[in-house]
Amino acid sequence: MRKYETVLMWSASLSEADLKKETDKVQEIVTNGEGELTGFDDWGRRQLAYLINKESEAVYHFVHWTGSSEVKLAIDKMLRINDNCLRHLTLKDDRDVMKKSYDDSPAFDAGE
Image 1 (cartoon, one colour):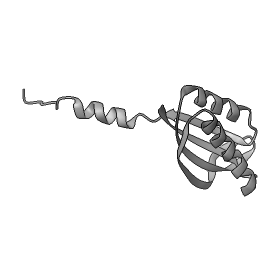
Image 2 (tube, helix red, strand yellow):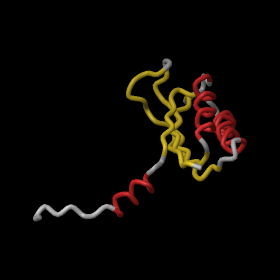
Image 3 (cartoon, helix red, strand yellow):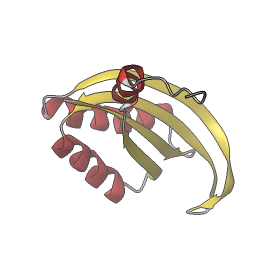
């Protein structure tokens, strides 16, 4: 299982109940794909730098989860066709792998 991070930008016109339904859909896809939701941050309502679908504000959510690449594809597909999602981005979280590779490499010594 890989670690992923997904940033979601929802339409600011959604009610709290609708936002809950939309984020529950993402959680359902992760759990149905034998993944696990490891964290959820509500960044709140933010002003956009430019209009997206005639919207000047969006509600941001940041989701940490583990799962397979098939789960990532399913989430991306669901969000692409969802009119309430203004933008989304899913990235592989490989910070632990990068830290290990830097820790294992020999230190660079400019004096030699």
